[in-house]
Image (cartoon, rainbow, N blue to C red; front, side, top):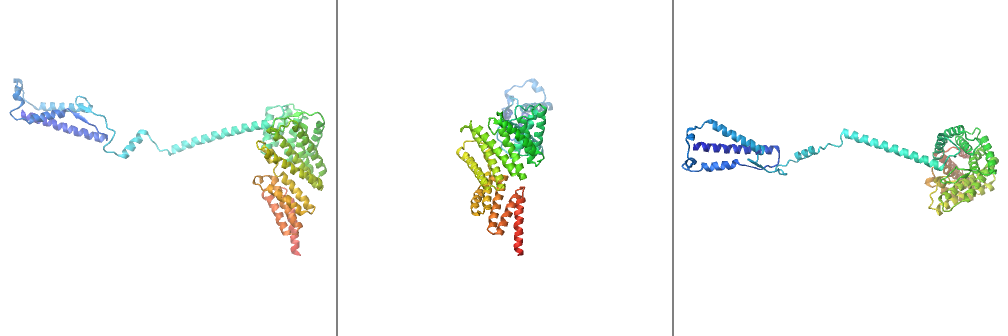
Length: 510
């Protein structure tokens, strides 16, 4: 019995040690964290071991009297099987975390064996991180970017069209007597192409369609609004070179406007340049008509008729200036811009009248008119320097005045050369080239012609001095400057070059 009890206690201890080793091994394989536990079997093992270390005579059987049942009951192999079953049951309870046999402490966050790659992979799986530049993500981002571009482009285009329409309605209103929503919008569209885009070929069909619609709506064909519309149609045709019947129509319209000017004036809101005043309709239409009818007679060579038309236009502009001056306010930005616009119209008509007198060889009158044009330009520049607080209309304060004074200086230099005063013409040439040499003026057609005109006058001076080679160089420079800037009307420059080349050929032959 004593040997059997020692054998059983040793067997239990070996089972417990193997169980502990298997448990630690399974923990190390599953997780790098540490798990501490204590088993109650270790106490039993110690007690059994201490019992086995006692003397043979001091056994527990000597203290505890045995009964007849114990002595009669033999020990079989079934007892060993029952003990093994109990050990397995205790192990299962310990694995389940039963508090009777096991005390489990919480997991420790640090690891005794750290694997950076495994930890990074575990973190990636836990956060579900995916690579950004995959084909699917690229297509998704490209689609979203395309949607944003289309959206902002559409919104920007709509905003631009709305503000352009409001600008046209405010600056160039259509007369209230002209009815029809579609016809009025056609007028605004024609004004957009005519004034803002400078494309008379696109503006002309819209003007013609608007006129037909206004007449079908019951507009008076002899009203000022319809005459203004007809004037815009003829002006676009003149700019496109469609001159058939323009002279007769404009002459008849001028007679009607002059008869209306002698009568009590009717007020008509048109030709607004950033202001709210109504203009005297007859004078306003006369000065617009003169800008088309005067150059028509000038191109035909009828200088007397051109001078007559330009004079009528100057009288109409002066009447407009008087109407503005009556209510002119020096502190009003709108009045400053309006008055400057009137000065521009007067200066341009004065310049055209001087051209007609120069073509008629009336140099005295032409010189007076060209010097008056230069004075108008100087007055305009003084307006800018003395009133920097203004926010004027750039069309009247910049574009219309560019090179107008230098163009007058070309004619003044030409007249002095015609009279044989080449030294006196150099002062006008030098002063004019300073104005045309500014970078911001290069895209202006009048500036291009002025620069070419100054080169031509330098060639004429060289020709008068007998330096034909230098004169030929200057004439070629004048021709090339116009040709390279895609200008028309090059016949005069070609004639100067051909004449000098013929002269040089004759000199070589002699």
